[in-house]
Length: 215
Length: 215
Image (cartoon, rainbow over all chains, first blue to last red; front, side, top):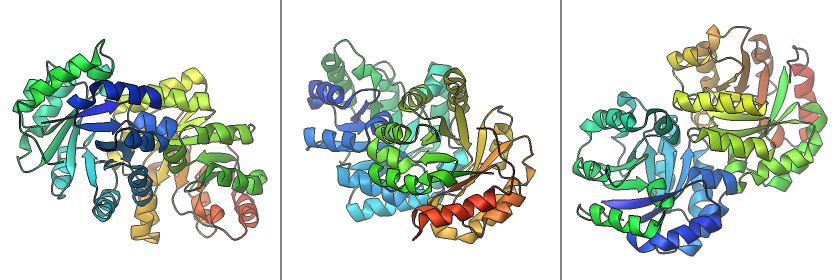
């Protein structure tokens, strides 16, 4: 299992400083939607410059204008972009095409998708699928949110590359590992920890009990 | 009917220069998603500074993290933000709450929503509802896209404030006027015109045959 560090509600220098503390214990770096909307593609560019050997995911949450958003993200240094599963299919397909032409990847965000939408999206080859409980839902529902989501995700198979995001902690990670998740997206459990480096090490130890995936 | 000028795939100086050309013939200025994702909140701040007396819509396409995105947008100078109709309901409700506390407004984007979702969202008081054919769908379907969308929108009533976006031209505006649309969102028909000022004047002439709405 890989660890993706999600950076949100931070300035770019804060994001860089924080990532340096945990760099050796995380696999992928997510430039969060809040950084992109607050600082634009500079956030992606500066994170890639600071961590050129890391896989950078730009959480663009693309919903339209796929070609343009893919282009500005990939040229800014993103290795992976995200597209909403609730977007029109043509938008998702255009992201996939752009990723193929740039030799990059796409994560399809299942936030608020129906089971029917998820089943249809799972046929898309080469995508990473992200089971996602939003920040807003976490604040509303707390622990309950994950339970509903995991039930819905019971039909995923081993051939899919699956990420999970939303309030994941050291306590909930083992269960996700057991359910076959390939990428655990960790935000505030690391970024808001008193000792981020120490917590990241614990996440790594748990995660690397599982299988590695190709980057 | 009001005209909202949608600014996309431009630099901030280009957006300012273009808006100056048509300022007197348009009502609202939309800082497009592509400007926000490319340049961050500077795009909103600089447009509000350049046009302090105009209503500025930040097309944030919020899907999560509503409180934070509303805060950074409203404090940057946005008068209206957008939230996706496909977002979790709590995200839409949080945008509405934030708008009330900032005395600003929210446009709910109906892109790729089902009729059931639309009917439930139309109960939200004070929102602007946006019938939206995405850029990607326009490229795929052309004229057909609007026909489908307008049929689906036949159940809107006069008490709702309705915007329409997606490839609107001088030819298609009269039909939208007749169907009771309150805000026409015009992008490339003006921004890519040989003479944007002249085209904007024609849009204004057509639009102001209809009723004004409160800003």
